[in-house]
Amino acid sequence: MSRAPRESNNDMNPEYDFAYGVRGKFYRKDAVLVPPIHLEADVLKYLQARASARDKTLSALVKELLKKDIELIEVVR
Image (cartoon, rainbow, N blue to C red; front, side, top):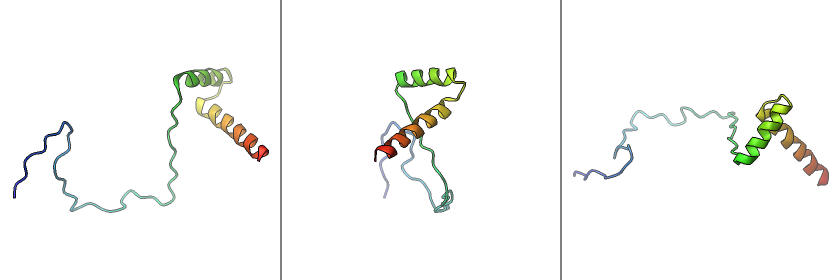
């Protein structure tokens, strides 16, 4: 039984051979994932300026601000 070729604009083949695939090859039980954070352009610009003025990295400044917010939230609880 032959299949008609799929017409698509992506580079995927219609079939892939997973005969030698290994389940869980890259799984790490204790891996910690760090999700990317996307900021709006105006917020990013503001925070970059503040970080530069304090001679800190953007990442360090954002962590500091978030930790302070967490403390405030916990106090209000």
